[in-house]
Image (cartoon, rainbow, N blue to C red; front, top):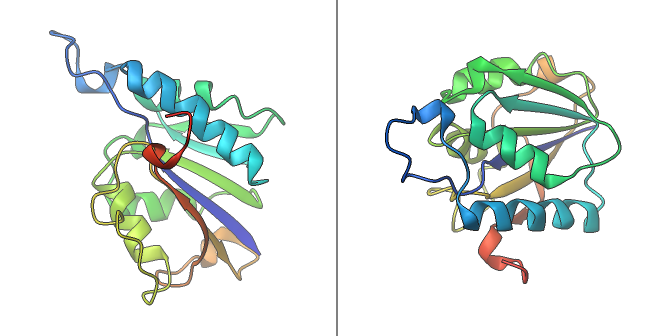
Length: 166
């Protein structure tokens, strides 16, 4: 069995004039929400052993502020920057961990979330996939290369506004 944790980066700062989209940082809310998400992951016993993360500044900052501990293997992948669902699926197919955290961007991360889970599952925010939104699914596979759409059993989901410290 494999566990997938799909997280959209925390809220980013749009005020930086002259900053490229790739280099945008987190804003104050994002810097507050990311540690709360890390606490939530730990409280739920969802420590990943592998992280796949976009190379953008805001995804790297989100990862740092999660303060995961446990020393997961971390892969920064430029292909995940603003990636479409098919690209995210391809990157996931090369994962090796039992529990993989993928930190990415919309609209791709939201599309993957909507397509990866059992189609009978209803989570009201999936269509928007707000910043910091996190969906956890389990998959009855022994190799990420066998990951198929519509096969994820949702075990956890959260948005930062639902966390008491946000």
